[in-house]
Image (cartoon, rainbow, N blue to C red; front, side, top):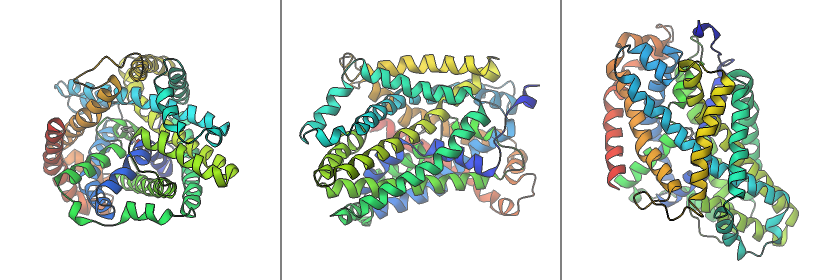
Length: 455
Ligand code: PHE
């Protein structure tokens, strides 16, 4: 039986490390700090935490319940838990979504490889500061080099995946997540000692409750979703590798806490550095690949070696955090092909690699030779980002919460969430969790979804 051959994560810590590896990524480094600063500092962080508890956590648990109940990939899970229904066809969307995300995500992962190489060559020390911005624009619009880097990034994810759940995903996240925390801590401590660092701290946390409006609430919810890797089946598939005696609530909270801690540390590290160099903080690729190299170039004027070392550590952090997320995104497709199409793991990984590599190449070219090709006014890269984070993730999250809240038997949900009634705390909060999954999550996601379409 396929079930008997299915691999499992090695224990509570391994599960949290793998899930935190998926959660911690570019979203923590380039989106969170900017959103927090723009949207009222501590006030935003407060809304973000509330959204994570009352919206993201129930959706996380819904995905985890489906995954662990079925011990199957997204499609197989729906077929197992709701045999003969249309749910499995809907689940195809949540298999395509992570593949679209990883296609463009790996282009950015590839840029971080190029920038790591640049740091290793101490390039930011020798480039005149005015040229740093044009250096980035020049690099991403080239046809070949970004594709080489994208290939290297995606290829590394594929190699990890081919090794399997335990020897690949688990092993990689077990050592990389702690390393990520050590690295970000070193960078943070250093950034806090820079002159003018406090301005950055203030930007991130100065509470301004007057800024909280519907737009900010939506931004906080969207970020919490993206950051916790929800709605695209990654948590579902990872949970399908969790054994029956683990506590899903603990996995959920553990992951969310690691993810938040990393976002805050990265936020302070990035913003203090950016402010101390007198740069205006931006968001997205510009924050990492333009503002930060500019900061390193500025720091190099007084401390070239330290600046060089910090820039290396920084790009290693970005690269590794993106790799652990990339692996989780690809695993959704790999698990599907292995279990439903009966492919060998290596073949399945190669198939996913080939598809996402091709789309990724087109996304990469959309910064250069294919820039003229537009979909609703967006380049292919922008379109993939938009359709997945505003549309597919919300649909997926809605699907999972409706499935658990309305399709699965309440007694099965209870059984899975409380491990057959043995977890006392889970038994006590089941009613609240079930209410959030059944009513609140679908309603709120519907609102986010509509606003995403309208914005
Ligand atoms: N959570 C990842 C980040 O913050 C992105 C991601 C989204 C990963 C969805 C997996 C699934 O960068």
